[in-house]
Image 1 (cartoon, rainbow, N blue to C red):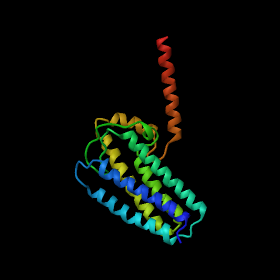
Image 2: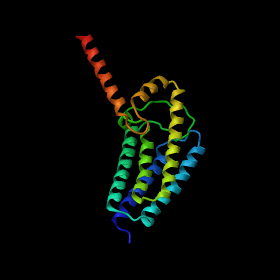
Image 3: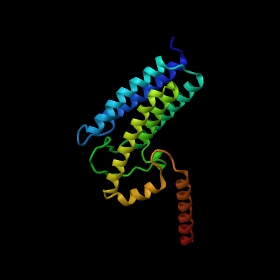
Image 4: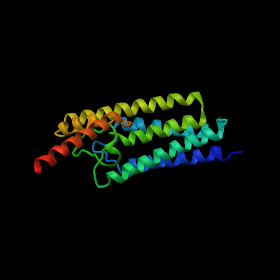
Length: 205
């Protein structure tokens, strides 16, 4: 019998995957068509998503603690994803591994803290499945997806550094983390901004 410890994270997993699928069709552009990289991501996401769902529903001896922890991770992933969508509305974002040059630099919302919030939300989703199911054979799925996101984010950062936005991106990269906030950088940047504001105020008085 499927109890709440199984169906709650299962429903949240499906919700996350459907959200990501929606963005692929309706939010991200594909200026060079569906690239090989996107095909790999899509194939892995479908296959691994089914594996995670199967493990959660049928193969795991769930505990309430694992179910709640994984569910919270799914909720955090979905919240971060939709926060990023809301922040990015009206701007053009190309899909992973697209060769087009970036035309704008986003620095609001979650982008104030991390450079790739979409990838962070995806990573949280895959980690959540392993936390809930606690099956060792799910670990390779998490590792493969993280490697893909690292490669995709590296390619995107390389595009920025070849673009007219390279200077601004270097400064942005200095104060943010790739997938997780860099609190040391944020603290240093906050102090620098405060010092600049104090100097500017002193010059006008």
